[in-house]
Image (cartoon, rainbow, N blue to C red; front, side):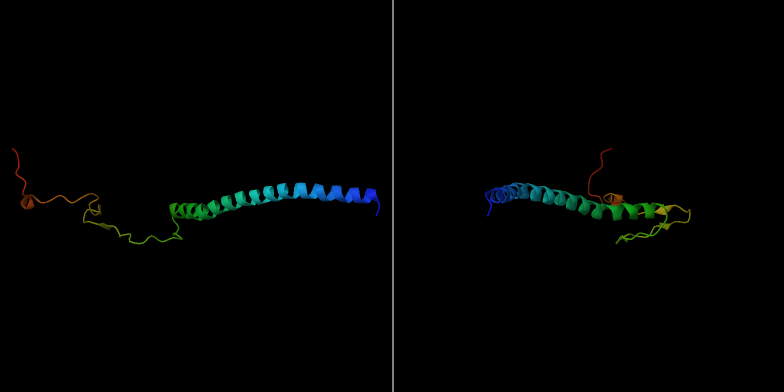
Length: 99
C-alpha cells in the first residue's frame, strides 16, 4: 500500500477516535436534559390544563375524593363543619372560671 494512503488512513482514524467520545457525550448530555424537561412538562401540564377547565366551569379530569357536599340552612347560608378544634360546651368543662 502507498505510504501516503496509510498516513491518510491513520489520520482519519485518529481524527474520528478523538472526536467520537466528545460528540457522544454532548449528544447524550443534551438528550438527558431534554428527558428531564419533558418529564416536568408531562407532570405539570395536564394538571394546569385541568385547573383551567375547572375554573371555566368544566368537569375535572382528576375527581377529588372525600369532598363533602355543601348544604344550606333555611336562610340560604352554606353550612360547613368547624375548621378548627371543637370547643367544649359550658356544661362539659371542668376548668374553673375566673370572674
